[in-house]
Image (cartoon, rainbow, N blue to C red; front, side, top):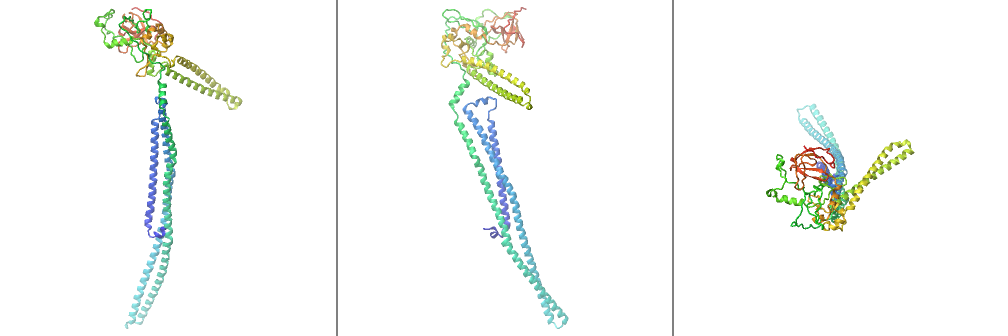
Length: 616
């Protein structure tokens, strides 16, 4: 089966067919190029998707990835990134093994095709030239024959005419012989040309054209084989990355199987456990018994067997409430234009004594004794503001212990890094001492001294945080302890339990609070509470004030002042008409803003130094 023998007369069709084959090859190259672009675009989108859901560094999201479910999701994101990389490999391999190779092959194919068809056209032109020569020789032979016949007829006519002279007849005879000779010569030339044409034609159709068409056939078959190999490579490129993609999918499956709901639940406990015991039962308060109320926040009478009245808690404890319970401020103050005499200091009338139910409920709630879980209200609020103290005292015991332990571990790592740097410099110094030409040994002394100082500072920090850690671990209650509200004897035997704020509650907004029952507190001496707050930091003073009028604080949370008395300001008026002031470290409360003249000063005097009463 050869195109040279079977398709000897289909030169033009073969030219069109081979051009179509090149067009198909170029179309396939374009298809592969678009496939590589799709693979690159898909890989880019996968990478962007993985990057979009990656946790941001130093953010809250990064802390959430300690759970097994979120770690599995993170592993999925990482594997998707590798999955995208395999699609990039597909694109690169298709570009190098298919697109680039076929593009180069198409150029070579075009040149080869052009050469073959040029030879075919040249052969056709040659045979056409031979045919034209044959036709010309044939026409010339025909013409000479006709001329010879006419010359012969003319001679015969002249020879038969008696009126023609002998000379004219001889002339006609010679002309006829010349024409016959020319016809013979044309016949010989036509015969020779015909033989030559037949030889050329036979060689053209049985030698030249078959050879040229055979080369074109081989070229076309190579093109077909090449495009088939490219399609096979197209599949192999995909097949080569299937094992790696399978590994990525296996890792995703493995990560999904590593999700442990029990472990995540335990981590939630570790993350939010406060370390406090739940509160005990609240005792019944019998309001039918006569009760002696005091001005201070702790207003319940002592129920001890000796019948003595309950010791008053110092007014310093005022304001140290639960973080989510608002301070029960006194009723709104009188207008600024009102004179001091307009504010009665004596008993109020029944109409004046009638208060709204909500106010009386708030007064009842704030009159209950408190055990404070934080050192002060300021530290409690700092938990919400994100600016906690260095010793993490604003956190519950368990969370504080974890933070302190993390800090100790971090400092130990820093110490190890500094010690490694010091060891390296020491070795370098030894090398400089042995080989002075390599460097000056004294040049590293300054850096060694700095590292020694840094290590010493870090060790002091470690000791400080380890001390706080030991303090917290010593205060954490055992798991077998009973709620402390249930036993007043337990409170008496473990006074530190009161100090460490064992009774806690967690408010809906995430802050930690506590409230102790009436019975337990009545069994704890007031001195215990006084000792608890002895080492508390007082609220900072923001200025001073001078009392313009005398004010007798009869409501809970207020403080009595005399006209002309100088006091410290610890909280400005928040728009409710009251200013919080302090007389000394044990007495503080609210007074009407219109009764005092405030002098704000950042550099106020020490809160422990009493002010002198100054009369106008």
